[in-house]
Each structure stands twice: as structure tokens, then as C-alpha cells.
Image (cartoon, rainbow, N blue to C red; front, side):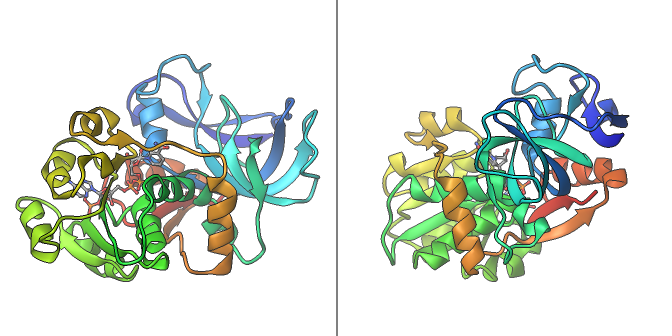
Length: 301
Ligand SMILES: NC(=O)c1ccc[n+]([C@@H]2O[C@H](COP(=O)([O-])OP(=O)(O)OC[C@H]3O[C@@H](n4cnc5c(N)ncnc54)[C@H](OP(=O)(O)O)[C@@H]3O)[C@@H](O)[C@H]2O)c1
């Protein structure tokens, strides 16, 4: 038997439950892993709330990304074998907050030994989002990248990507995240009232790319600092970004291999700040659902 966190109905955290089930068997294109670590994302709560639709079969396993060791491979899977260490995204309808999980082989890569299982678990969703959102508009060295929500899982990696590519990075976050944001090489700007004026104080000519990881009014407040409104890219609120002239992030297939290779070489730390056991998975969810985590939260069964 194998433990997994599921939601039993769409709605609030009261619908989450840790249950036991048979060890899942991989279907075509899937691999089964013994989970070593699973990244927790805001999307896990959005899915449970039904914001991505209400068609999943219930109870629905939770968790979108994981690292672990392959225990079985499904039909047609040629790139992986039992015993391989991997990182990847959950197969359709599956979840990674579990002792054993099914991954989509097409969204899985080998885990380099230089990357710990905990760090690896932050790559398939947050790492790839950080990669895609910083590459959609091509900037050159010395150009200015502003990140709204710079202290979260995606933001800290996006800021480090910007620094590694020799952009001038401005990271907007709440005061408690100043040191963390500055550790990425970014210049810190405190979020909240007057944020656009504080940014203009640093970049009177405007910024070349706004990466939005927050959305809503915070995005409306910051978007005017972009030199070109088309260079406002969001991971979270495409409707508002489009209204302002920008767009939603376009996800790419190559991001997974590329960001994994960069993290393997060392310049980017996924900043895993909290690890929870599977028994405490509900606490891990609550920490991320609060909307103000610093860095990445992972679950280690
Ligand atoms: N489209 C995709 O494929 C994709 C992939 C990954 C993530 N996402 C989305 O991208 C967003 C960020 O993800 P994440 O994993 O980085 O989330 P996270 O780790 O929860 O971080 C979000 C950050 O936003 C900050 N924040 C909240 N309100 C703010 C405000 N008014 N001004 C400035 N910062 C504010 C929070 O820090 P403070 O305490 O400093 O406010 C927090 O650090 C989420 O909505 C997620 O669902 C989308």
C-alpha cells in the first residue's frame, strides 16, 4: 500500500485527506516513481478549488511535480529504466504528494547527481515557469528585468536567471524578503502603495521587461513602468496583462532540460526553504496557500 494526499471534493482545504491506496501502475507513456520530494505550488490549491475545471475523477491525488527513483515504466517509455533518478511532472489525473506517483515520461528528465532530490522537486513547475517567463522577451546584458513577486518559488529563480544573464534585475516583494531577494543579485523594492514611484526612482527611463507573478491590482500598479506594454508577461493573470497590452507566459517543451542543466552547473539555487513530511502535507499546502511563502516548499515522504 502507498499513502497519497487527495482532495475528495472541490473547495477548501477541509476536502484534503491523506489516504492509502495500491501502488499505482504506469500506463502508456508514464513512469512510476518512489517519491523522494514533491514541490508544492499555488496551482495545487487552485486545482482543489476548481479554478482549473471540475472534471477530475475524485478523490483526486494532489501535487504536480516531483523527484524520485523509477520503480516501473509504462508501455512505449524508452528513455527511463527502473532505478533511474528523475524529476518531472505528474501524469494526467495523478499527484505527487505521495509515497509513489506516476509521472508523464514526456515531461520528465534524468536528475543530475549534483542536484539534491529536494531542489530537483522545484524544477518541473516553478523552475520551468521561471525559465519561460524570462525568455519570452529577449533581453540583452544591462537591460532591466523587473519581477513582481520576486521572493516566491518562481520569483527567486527568475531573479537568478536574470542575474546570470547579466540583466539589471529589480525584485519587488514585501519587506521581510529583502535579504532573500538581494541574495539573487537583484535590487530590492518593497511592494505596496507607491511601488511604481519607487521603481521609477531606480529606473527613470522605465524597465525592459515586467515579469508578473502576482496579478490583479498589484499588476495594474506596476505595469506602467514597462517601456513597452507588450513586455509585461504574467504567469498568473493573463486577462489583466492582455488588457494592459501584455500577455500570458507561453510554456515551452525545452524549458525542463534547459533549466535543469543550468541548475546542475550551479548558478541557480531553487531556494527550498521548508520541507514537510507527507504526514504534514496539509501544513505544507497551508503554507503555500497563504500566498506569502519565501522560496519553495517541498514535501519529503
Ligand atoms: N502558468 C504557469 O505555468 C505557472 C507556473 C508556475 C507558477 N504559476 C503561478 O505564478 C504565481 C507565482 O508562483 P510561485 O510558485 O512563485 O508562488 P509563491 O511561491 O506563492 O510566491 C508568490 C509570491 O507573491 C508575493 N506577493 C503576493 N502578493 C504580492 C503583492 N501584492 N506584491 C508583490 N508580491 C506579492 C508573495 O510574497 P510577499 O509576501 O512578498 O507578498 C510570494 O512570495 C502563482 O500564481 C502560480 O500559480 C504559473
